[in-house]
Image (cartoon, rainbow, N blue to C red):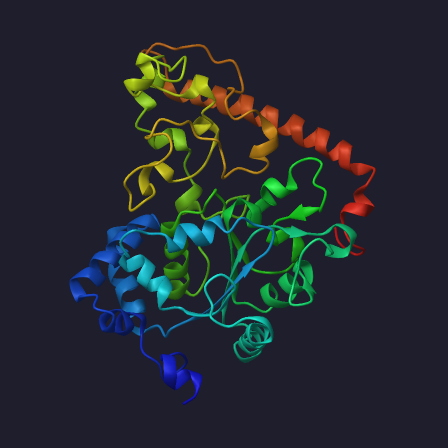
Length: 372
């Protein structure tokens, strides 16, 4: 029995909806999932029938998941759900032909499976990348199966229909790229020029956003609109601050001054404790984590800005950036937010300029010949 007959992939295979049905997902649950994922993609309710129509007909897609310089946090976030949801089933019924953490094969068998997939499905498979890619000294600081991460990324991402960079490391280089960046770590889009890449930064990436990207691609045959950092606007189009449940306390000038004080216990704003929500773009307040139970700010910890480039180098996690004093509720929240964002932008610009000056002298060492 060949692969297509065995797992339902390919031209004659079952649709996503049919495979979900065989896994015990009722039609009602399937329609509920389509409605939820349409909302997650920031599409109007009128688009739900189109999502349903597409998933009723689209064939099981092939996916390759690569891990480079990473902590496997994005894989763990995906796998450690307490109660599997329909969204996770959609990911589960993808034909995941290569994933070092979860696949049974190892060694030469694993590498043979990867080679076969990228050859047989060239230009048709999806690639998910977790972790940064080292460029320094020709990419010798990371390798799998005798190939450097750099060579592997160019081979696999370059032949994929689309590549999804999950997590901040795959998107921007992450902690491995913190100054002085000894391995020359970068994100996928900088390592593989010409590849079709969408970034889903965050530590870890929210699995709901990954599901939404896959469904969007299956529905429309393309990636969604992206911002200047290559992030989908439906997930990163608004600041954390815009939808934060502690926003009214910010507007009223009610801040936590010390961990565990009365203001902290009463859910006041965490800005003075280093919360970067006013300068961070992500849908954490609406999508949340752990089956939408909570998210860091709701649980009492400020946003660290992990979906923004170089957040690890920009400022101490527990120190506010610009000195914005408390404002009364009669002040314009937008004025406060814009002023804060301007201050953060200035800090990022200064930080970037200093990094550029710092790295200018060893630019040749940081990148292999021919890379920019």
